[in-house]
Image 1: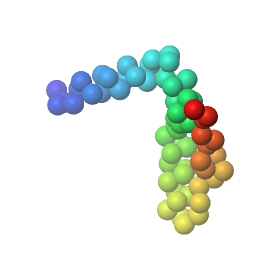
Image 2: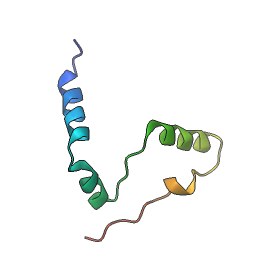
Image 3: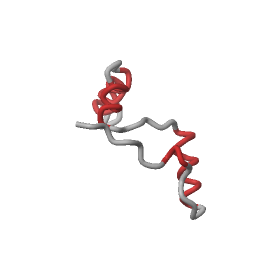
Image 4: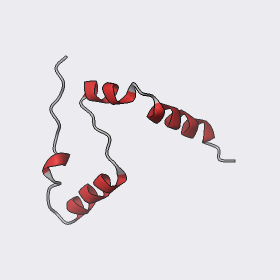
Length: 62
């Protein structure tokens, strides 16, 4: 019913792919849960820097 159903299916498949965590790690990325994302947003809106866990993660060596 939604015009973007194919993109949602592709997103779901991506998130279920067991290779995703390793691919994110290689790129120096980390998935955040909605709770973590909202906490960082509240901290930014309050004018303070986000907590230590939201600062830049070490970049992988290439």
